[in-house]
Length: 153
Image (cartoon, rainbow, N blue to C red):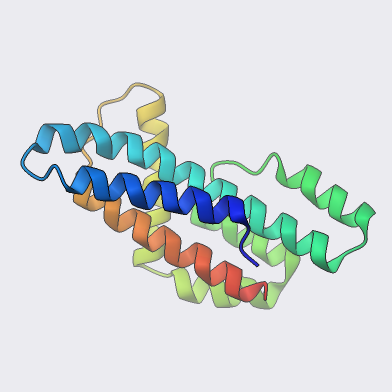
């Protein structure tokens, strides 16, 4: 059910991660890119969750309900794990249970870390996130998006 928008966003991020990884000798360069990639990853999470549930509503509901869901999801921001779980529960409590179980530990921590770091970066605070760490967070985030996509099939 994944949209072309999600696929393109993911391909762009994959490309950027590969490009930055290819400059392995310059740790300072990678550290600056890690911050930028953190912001992009946070946007990817928000947009993907919003997009997946909007598409689900459009496929499974009449146009009026789909328009309402789409409108409500436009304000979905700060996609920490608990907010994603709450949204999922609104669609189907059983999905929330499955997603909570899937996200526990590493994946939940990765999503929450991305959002927390993004807030710090956006407010001009100094953050110390390595390229390797943000790449791991991104991979965990992709796993969660893929899992949600599978739930909605």
